[in-house]
Length: 144
Image 1: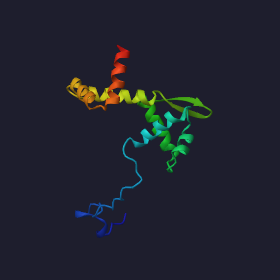
Image 2: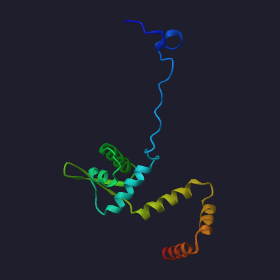
Image 3: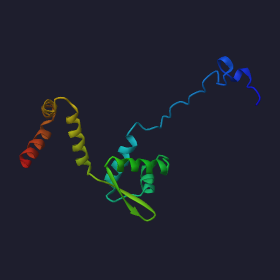
Image 4: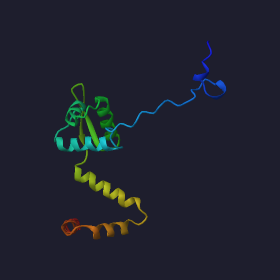
């Protein structure tokens, strides 16, 4: 084996590069964490029927690979947000909850995170615009 030239090795000639390779700049089109899952879930809600990964890919646009879409759909299934059923040679995906049910679950999760959920709920209710307070009051009355 021939020795590396001195310029290609780091201190002590240990075979490591003397400088780290340049790190590519972050892509300006990269989505924020969870953004693709939210977009796919919103698409499933609006579709009104189970969708195959190729249909999700087509409707989202943006040049995403079908494997990226399939992985995202599987993550939604693993999180209990979507379900899949055999369809042809693949699977079709549908949301397990309606959008408003999902939002309610998230609100309850936020309440449970704090040390004083009663105070959070009281503050939330006090910050609601009057129209929403009436909706909340009617919902609480209807559910007993």
